[in-house]
Amino acid sequence: MNCPIESRNPEILLAHAAGELDAAMAQAVDLHMAECAACRSMAAGQAALWKALDLWPAPAVSLDFDRRLYHRIDVEMHASWWQRVSRRFRLIPLRQFLPVTAAAGLLLMAGWILREPAKVTAVPRQADTVRAEQVERTLDDMELLHQFSVANSNKGESENAL
Image 1 (cartoon, one colour):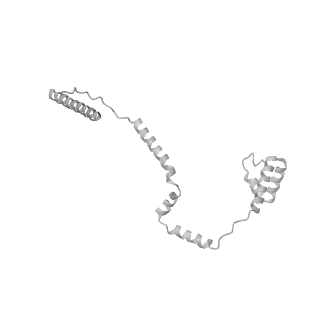
Image 2 (cartoon, one colour):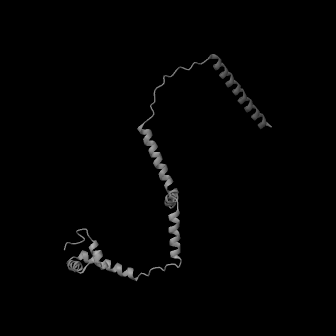
Image 3 (cartoon, helix red, strand yellow):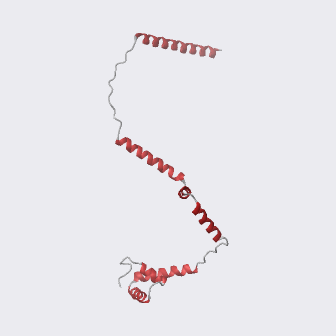
């Protein structure tokens, strides 16, 4: 017999531990395990696992289990397609996916911008024409503002003197 572990077929050892093999196959596995330490170790681990599962007490089933189960099946059968689809997404907390979605959106936008940059064309700059009247008004405004600042500083000095 080929080694089940080396041939990547450990299901034979699992079936042997569960007692599901016929007598001829079980005898062949027993002969192989007498020679192979790896298979013997795996079979011993499976036997220990089955013993532990046999000792574990099953939880008691509530008295209204059947009623609740059939009610749940009935509700599921009469639910609309939208309710069935949306129910699966209710379990997912959306707040966890918001940063991931935002980051993915930013990456997509950056990729799109880098892939197709805006075509910038040089616009010939026209010389700004400055009119004499405009310069004169600007100088008058600056002089008026200067007079206000001087008046405010003189007013502050006279208040401090009092």
